[in-house]
Image 1 (cartoon, rainbow, N blue to C red):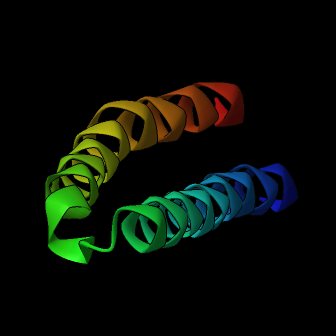
Image 2: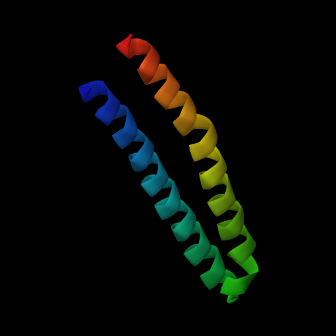
Length: 70
């Protein structure tokens, strides 16, 4: 059970770090271009990728952990 919690925390940490980096890129390039709306598609694309990766990798992680339990 302990390793399952560690694996999930790595997943959550990765998502948080990814969103912080994407937000920084959005702020920097938005500031430099003086148009924050220009980079909104990047935020939307990353949001979609976050959901897709959670479905793909999150489910795989659950299966892998379930396999180790048996």
